[in-house]
Length: 76
Image (spheres, rainbow, N blue to C red):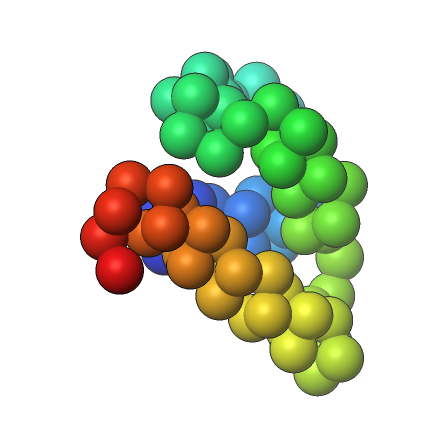
């Protein structure tokens, strides 16, 4: 999960500042892990500056996703 969220942070920076960035990553493993709807939501939300309020919302989302994953796989 941490790697996925780190990817989205790096992607956001690249989209803002890289001159030749193309958003062509193979997201199939992430889609298989999180689901298509979640990936679509992350694709649109995890862009731009991650100011304090946005970081708080991302932290809450991350926490809920981890708890859901743990529950789904009987890890808690």
